Length: 173
Image (cartoon, rainbow, N blue to C red):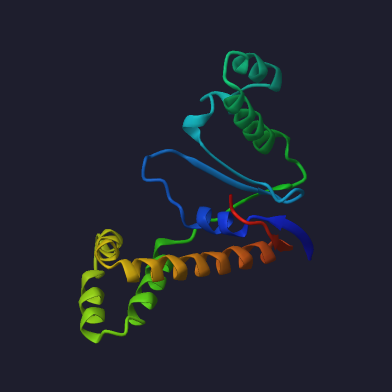
């Protein structure tokens, strides 16, 4: 397995993050450098994938530096990555995250509260109701954040290992 410095926490966060704003998201890992690349389609010119590199450079000449960098990286990933250097970061399914949320709730020691929260998280809107519960119970919110970070890291490391990478964890900035 290849040792590579990777921000494992960021990979885990991106695996769990699903945009609710309707933008197409692109999440990749550069398997040569360990860089995590994340951008949305609203950050790049809409015709980027339908032009040659020279045309792209012309399209970007009046754009700010950040937009140019993101667009060029997106173009590189889409059109110039013949080696498979960039791996798409997978998303965790909402079903899996729900199971982890349920596992967390089953560990609430107060039986009465545990039963109430289990009832609260049944059916449509479970995640929003769970967040509302956490907003009212700071100690459980802190415990959930720790639990969530741990399972996201586990899934990130599992995925990285599955693509042949033994991560040397970089701290998320």
